[in-house]
Length: 267
Image (tube, rainbow, N blue to C red; front, side, top):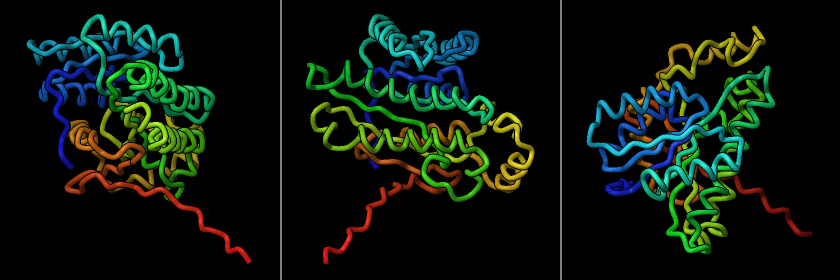
């Protein structure tokens, strides 16, 4: 698919203090976009922004702390972005957590954070309220499109990512897109080689579930941050409501079709 022209645009990224956020920001800067990074961890955020400014001294980079669970926090960060760089054209919901023990936080960050990002984008970008439209990209997961594989080992994480896929398909439906001009898509990557992976015990305290995760991942190629960033970027112009599977190697992003319920026969 054709790549989106980013020159002069502003990209708003949550989870900007992480490895994927940094890789996406680097790519977007090289494509001419200003980047505005948000993260709950001010320390991680400031380090990434400092690195980017050293690597791209002519690049436009802004930042703001943001807990994606807070809708007022989204408003404040959005205002900061507009003040520092201008109004975003692309919003990328990267922020996410894992952990079955604190499953309430997993749901709060992974589901509520994405929902807040979409409704905030509608609030400021919708053509119904004078906005110019835009693109929202949600980072889901292979765990968000199927329960086959090792997904049973992390029920809360899997459920939260399925919710991200559902938010994408619903808010991305033409019912919303035709009114707002805000396209909502998602990507479903396999593991990405960033500190987020951690150790299996970080995903679940259940030792048997940890063994299942380790066994399932053994021998499989994982995405590098740069590879993941490029594959994500290549989906920006995709049809609203679509979800794209990302795997390592030469495989291009694959559009995962939605399931249509069979129609009952009327006797």
